Image 1 (cartoon, rainbow, N blue to C red):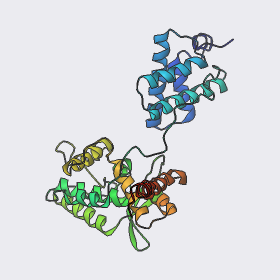
Image 2 (image 1 turned 180 degrees about the vertical axis):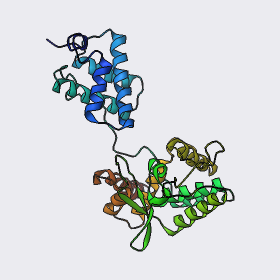
Image 3 (image 1 turned 90 degrees about the horizontal axis):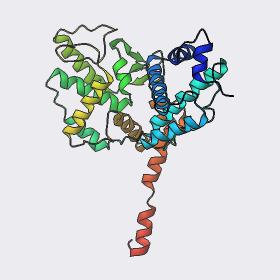
Length: 318
């Protein structure tokens, strides 16, 4: 007989509510704030679903039904996958601690397509994007420096946000920027700053100093120029907005071109211009080379001229 969550709340003195169960789980996995927030959203959605269905003792079929309800509601496969993964982890923990049977064991989430959801820019488009920036203002100087750095180094928005002035250091005979990558707790990896990016960054920092900005090692490398937040650290949202703004300025305004497209552009242009998959993996700091291989496979298909060959055979083209 399955143990209900309600009976757990009534018979386990240390656990008085589902929320307490969940809080204990978060403490157990020692999740980062962003991860904990994602888990919270997933479990809250599942609890709301159970409440609406009047289910007090959920079974495996209820987890499956919840998954299908997410799909029916038009949730993206990545969202469905994340929610089900959270539920699997939660019930794995409840079973390990004798609180509730693991009803979500081996429940699959959603099939994710192995392709990038964002498009990259061609070399011509990337050049056009940079030329379009008005660098006569401190805001324009900052935006240009951010864009050229992201395009040539493949940095994520969060890595731009976390970057401090003191993270720029000399390595061998080049300037490097040490970054705190995705899932990292320290700035243990670096990207090379090309001459064009270095010049843009130094031009921006000079203008910032001239406007009264205090430039210390712990100061954000890229800061806000808004009156109420002047010289304070940017957010990922503000960087996404400024990238979208400049993309729109050159006529690129669609959902598939975002700030993350600049990272895709760096990887793609590197591969197109002689960079190996291994070098691109190192550039992007992918822990698994299979992630980098997605770029390589996409380019291999782009170079495949099978359709043209077939058309030549049919229509007699040479």
